[in-house]
Image 1 (cartoon, rainbow, N blue to C red):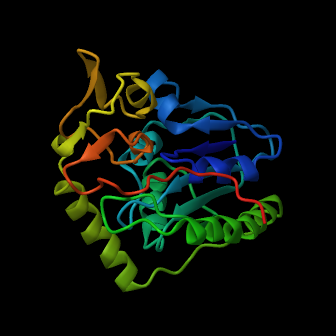
Image 2 (image 1 turned 180 degrees about the vertical axis):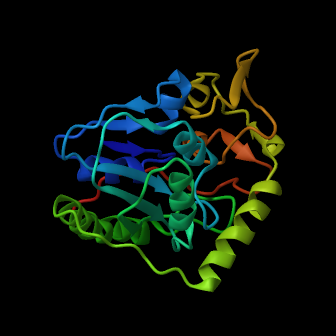
Length: 247
């Protein structure tokens, strides 16, 4: 069974490539439905796939692990992290939460894919973005083989990577208020952003989306829509969502 969380499609794509005959489960949907207990078939691997946010993992992923209940014995658990710059010690964060639940990790892998956090810096040029998607494919396939072979592969985190994760993560989470989100005049009030939000942070008021303060997890899912802005930071910036690229 593969549990995934994905804002703009990178981690969903990885989960779909890793899937053989396993069920893939959206962590956000499982939390929304309050259905976090799962039966694991004999010999089945348990996988978690998610993005890296400021050298850590999304709050939603940590919440899912805290509610997760695996009802059968299993022998192999792995984590795959998608990122635009580096995984930091995000894997250690997941490993720590799993241990508190009595679960374990046998392998941690990471895949470099296009960054989607347009609030910081300029997005990559289209050509560079497409090349990164192409470069990720053999890496994902190698991870799939490693999982099928049940390889054990846990990284040895450096003190620097651990310090970066445990300092940068809370700092970035604290100082990026959601009140800066708004829609410009091109918004048609379709409500897709509210339906897409994994934590129900967007509500429709008089036909326009409104963001709840301090509730957004900044997954960038809503920013697929060019009508959504964040202060003056992302105006005229290209928005990212995963797309298939063929050589």
